Length: 411
Image (cartoon, rainbow, N blue to C red; front, side):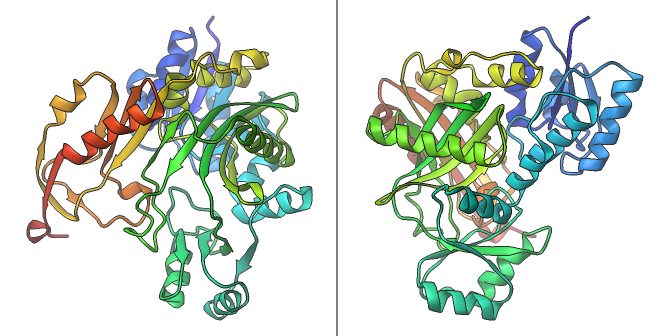
């Protein structure tokens, strides 16, 4: 009988991983609270449970394991729910990262405290208890700073504080997005930002994913911190890439992870690499499922699935076989009701366009961009070099027409 893999989250970004697991000959169970989750269409079985509700998902997984068929592995793909995954793995006696490690990764404050204790280079940080406390921190540390919820995702509630930003508004805005009503501030790091994706194997790290992040619209969307995409291969020299990778891998191990995937948000500062935060899971943004395989030939998701099933993964399986140009760029539309979308099919057919997707259709309302969930869509392109891939992506972003009418927006 085929082994059974539980994939927690049936969102659209999980679909490539679900399909891959099926091609690997696995019986795939997808868990999601949304009965219309896209991943259900490709799964053998479904479990209706909130990916963020640890207890509900653990209970549902135990019931399925006892009443339907034995679950052999559990994983999430492009979903920020490592605590749910680790808790299911612990309850069922399956391979996985320690629950304690997942809990540290779920709290940006606890994570930073652990990094500080372990000597992992990270920006100054501190809990913010009130508006008055924030004002004191700004007086002491100066601008720029970042304020963020300790336990949110998708850049919700993340703000770059500079002179002129209303601190009372900023504190209250960030607080609204924290399920635990906790916010923190940290030093804003200057320097190239990088997304890494590493796999830790018996305490040794390999980092096949290394993508330069693009923040060209930092001023346009201020004080919100909105990423506009990324590209690979990185512009950083080889020695600098290696040092960033080592710090990202060390950060994952500092959380107590010996076997698993760690996704790093990194900055290469004038003092060397520093960690903004680590996610104890496969990345979203089509990075693990599309961008890394396209740019390097590494089947990171397949290796992660095997690791979740208790199989051995050799480090050389994660070494890039080549380095091709890959870029992702996001669409941003003016707020209002969408009245027209042009050129979509034309651009989808262009050579070098790997994936082009809009998140909304004609008649939908585009809201102001305040976090990453408000972006209008994206395109992933390939080329001989990063520059060629970026050139094609930028051309499509510039020429694809998304017309909106604020006067027709009734919300």
